[in-house]
Length: 422
View 1 (cartoon, helix red, strand yellow):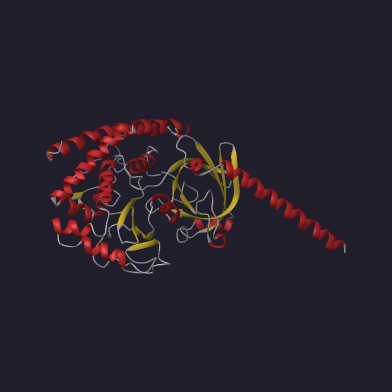
View 2 (spheres, rainbow, N blue to C red; view 1 turned 30 degrees about the vertical axis):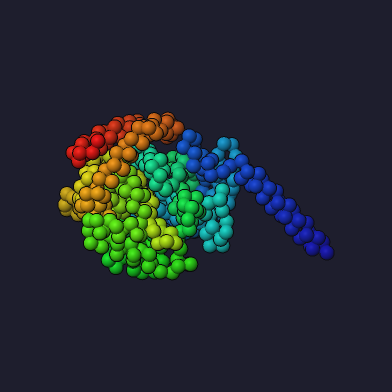
């Protein structure tokens, strides 16, 4: 009887503690929201507690991208949520780092047995270490400009990341592109979300494979629509004839206005690692139930003209704004050539005068938006917010980024003049 009584008392105590914890978390969640997480004007704190088995898995290159168990704690404006159970994995290809370094992460709040769980309404979150960004401003500035131009793009914020009590320094929090993101950006229903893979492009046959195989990976929509027929339609249109016939056909399967805005913004930002660059990398294709596609940017750390290929400090990198081929800083080392063909949709647009003119007018609009929206002022403000995490070299690179924007605007003006566009 005594043992049973003790068990009952312990059980009751645990239930009380559980209710207390839930109540506290609920109260905190009422104060904190997604704006707290994606706030460019302050720095939050995120703590990951990673058990040994998970840590060892992440530190093994063979398993680094497999989700493992961890806990997540978020603090902003004096309020804390957590610790909560999450799944985490490492992120990156050329930027993939070991746990002893400064790795980037994908956080899944609804991983495995956590299905249905949300954090401030989110299923997923991306934490980027900005290891390929000497200024720590590229992704903040790039996604801001895409959103200003009406191209659906993630929100960003700043956080101080600690792993098992050890500080990893400043990270950028990035809104993950998933069904929650899509629902917040589009009024119609998403059919599929595809993730592009470098150098594949919209080539015939590239609508192959299943959800997680083939030349395009299906990120959303496979459960309800287990096929890539819509992607096949886009590929057929992309390769259909040329000139006016191609342009008309493309209009049946894609939002041409959004695509041109996407390309113009990518080009203004010098995003050589995006779709319209020489690698056709870092982009999502989203279709609606009418099988019409738009494009969503991703992986914008290689922007604003930083040239990490050379040993020269603060040198700028530019690629052509209106040519069908382009290089990138490591093109000689990787491919033993100076330039490579750019994204198929972009190059076919340049080859058709009506599309090229429409693209150049979009480029003009982007340059004007940079001025009217005071993008450089936003970059300066962001640099001030993260100043305590910025070395002298980082601050010098931040100044170069701000100066590069004006240089790029001058290049846009020259291209417009060369093409007789006022």
